[in-house]
Length: 196
Image (cartoon, rainbow, N blue to C red; front, top):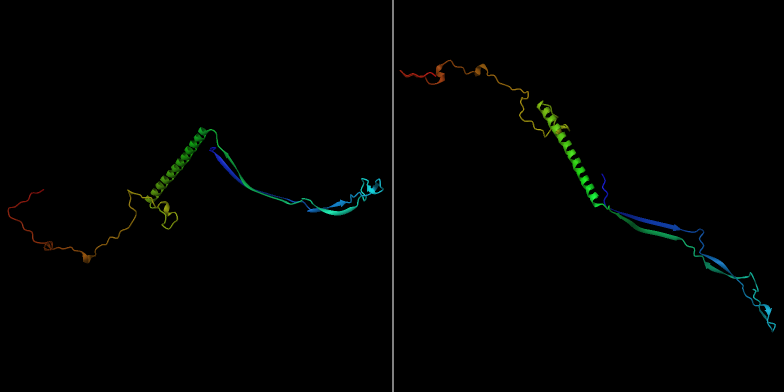
């Protein structure tokens, strides 16, 4: 039996990531070309003036280091997520709990009945064995099984022996003399005793 109740779930998490580009190049050289235009045309006075085309096309004046922006990326995230759910039908939930409680009580009662049956069977068997004079030795590991069983009103006596001494001839106190019995008997004349 399973009853759906409100549940809350907490899920901690940790994630990480690393990204890198190989080969790593932090800077590269950018050529700076000679874009000077100082001659190629003449003004009214005959002086050289720019004609709109570089005087030395393709010539490199110098190289300028340019940052690439390339970098390794490291990411680490810590946190937890939580979800909570609850059943919408409260009455059904209560009935399910009552049914579960009744089921538990029934299982406990069945266990108690089995225990009672076991104890009564143990009492009966131990009692019968004790009446017959059968028991475990006190040093036996099973002696405790019947140790708490008491048998009363036993109708037989356990077989046993007695020693009865017999007197010897010299110890016999037989006397033939009336004087040994005590004072002499006297009777009164004319007296009689009723016979009963």
